[in-house]
Amino acid sequence: MLIECHDCKAKVDAEIIGHHTDNDFFAVKTFLLKCPSCNSSLIAESHEDYKENEQTWTKPVRVYPKPQRSLGKDIPPIVKISIEEAEKCMQAAAYLAATAMCGRALEAICRHYKTKDNYLGGGLKELKDNGLIDQRLYQWGEELRDQRNNAAHATDTDISSQDANDVLTFTYAIIDYVFLLAQKFEQYQARKVKRLKSKETATTKT
Image 1 (cartoon, rainbow, N blue to C red):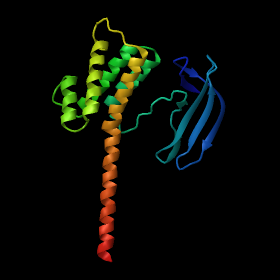
Image 2: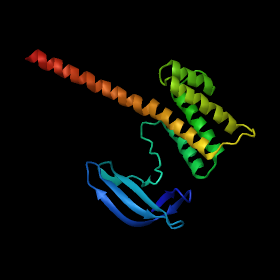
Image 3: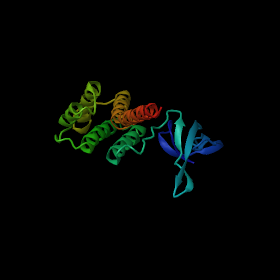
Image 4: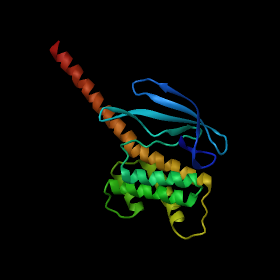
């Protein structure tokens, strides 16, 4: 099975030691794997899916150790491409490139929301002013912007593995807030309104 090995930092054809299928509402296949290069133990999951009423399975993703992030379908492709490239750069220990790709992901968020300012700094401020991010996330975004500038331009600045990992973590936090948590809150509010209306209807009938 082709999977990313966290130690080898490469895609390997891992040996399947065993597997189990959890037959829940949407079934999950869990695989115990062994890397052929370093003998590390890996655990991967594949989720049941349906296309045109036919059962399919998603591409296996490593869930242990150091699980890879799985981006949902609600993330715009322009953002997803950049953050996935950042992950690949981290796997290859290309920390300058990973940081630059995180900056590109932030630019993609601004472009998705059609900010008027073409520069990242102005775009982030527009996102804050429009209520799409809060003050804390804006501060994180400003720090990411500085790191992106250091990575993208020919300077003598070095970016460590820890710094690049932090930049990636902050970028994911902004993506989660803008695209996932905001949507979940809207869905929660809609359900709350629906429940209140149901109660009012029931009260009126009685």
